[in-house]
Amino acid sequence: MTTETQLPKNASDTDAVALKAARSRSLAGENSVLWTLWLTYGAFYFCRTNLSAAVPGMSSPISAGGLGLTGEQTGWILASLKIAYGLGQLLNGQLSERISPRVLLAIGMFCSAGLNVLFGFSAGFFFLVFVWATNGFCQSLGWTPCVRVMANWVPVVRRGHAVGLIGTGYQITQGLTYLIAGQAAEHLGWRGALYVPAILLTLTGVFMLVCLRESPEQTQPTSQGDSLAGVPASRFKMSLTESLYWTLYNPALWLLGLSLGLLNACRYGFTDWGVKHLVDTQKIGVGKATLQFFVIAIGATAGSYLAGWASDRFFGSRRAPVVCLLMVLLGALSPIYGYVAGQSVIGTMVILVVVGFCIFGPQVLLVGTAPADLAHRGTSAAAAGFVNFLGYMGAATGDVVTGHYSSAAQGGWRIVIFIWAGWAFAGAAITGLLWNTTTRKEVVMPGIAPKLAALASLAVACFAIHQGQQPMELQWATYLGLAALAGAFVNRWFAVPGMVIATAGVVTVFVGYLRKSGITWDQTAAMVAYGLAIVAALMVLVEQKEEPCELLSSPPDAADA
Image 1: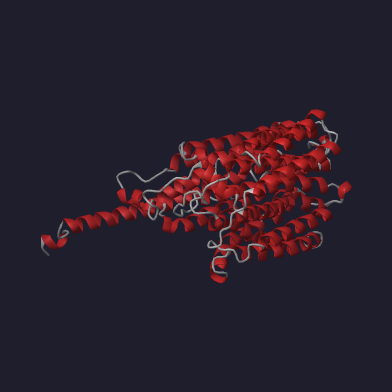
Image 2 (image 1 turned 60 degrees about the vertical axis):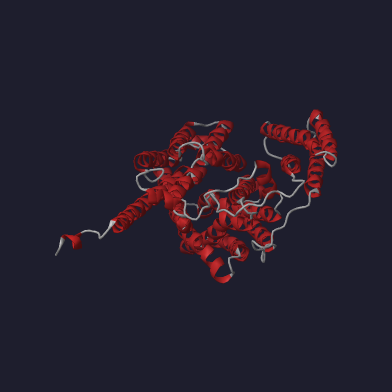
């Protein structure tokens, strides 16, 4: 054999061999990073879902080692995480583009672990709300940095698979959290459900710092090049007001957000309160309850993977039919679950598997795929963030409602289960309005719609605070806000004082609630009305008088779990 046959024939062959070797190394590095991200983001759920195992102990009398919290107080603690998480998503998506992902992930993981420990040492209701809300903000530091790292390594053609793989991580760790936190609460007391998961999250944070590389090395040009494959090298950027306009004026996104809010209210009814429901219904310990409940993660993993495939395979990439059908099934299963939970352990576990499938199949489609499909070109990430924000506001509301009605004085678990079913059916009905909607059928709201909505919302707030005998200063300020919003028909900037007054109204009514025991219908109506007025006023401010620029389509940067 000659020397020539042992070596590449020319420089071109040498380059081809080097290119192939570089791509092989890049793929190996890509797989390693994906599995690191799989564990990293999944580990966040150790210190997010674990409180469900502590809820029964927190609700027990102080003499028995609990905190003596009412169901409504527990609901507000759980809701505080959702509110802070939703708001954090709006901010941290921008931070992840400017700060090292490893730094953000480390801050989120270590601070969340520390806050779980602090929660275990705490007792006062208001301090517990503050700590768990802060934990929610730290939890919101998890997803977008993971997506940024994934985008650095994975070419566009493989990102769908990559996101799906990472997404299964939190389904599995969610199930493990029920087992680990439940057994810790059983043997160490309810505070053990906070301490043990905090240790696991801390260890995973150390692993992340040691093993995670944010991007391929510069000596591997094909890695960096591949990571941007399929993304235009030059792409016009939308201004903030244009992005807000195309997002907020898209009625399809509002429908998706409302549907996700209702689904999340039902989802967190099961995941946050399911363990306590089994403890109360079956009269068993938290350890045995979590052994039953963890199987929901099995159905969740399957649903997350198969829902998108079904929408492509059977409905021509229309997501609404799959979401609608699964939510109808979820609504039908909820009262069946309520009955079976008191009769059969095996039956309970079987239904929980199907419930997990029916919850997380639609959830995966609603948080990312459907918003990206129905968003205006160039606003996919903003659309997913807006829909996800509405989803977590629904989750927070659901926790408060579930906590209130779970008490025997308000009807107990039987009423709660039917409320969950109602939410699922309502979400299915809203999604059904988008049954035949595709990316080729984009609609924009008329400019008068948010002006009328702002006026109507503030008018409802006026009525509610009058009925609730809120401070006279707030009533007069709200009347002034109504006048300002009426002026927005002439000049959009009149919406600014209306937005400021609505924001002050939310804060004032909420502070008034904290000073009393129990929330009344007028307080709830006022806070919701003020919140809608804020959003409507913002829509007035970002309205585009001229046709905004048209942009190339771009894939979404993230979809929260």
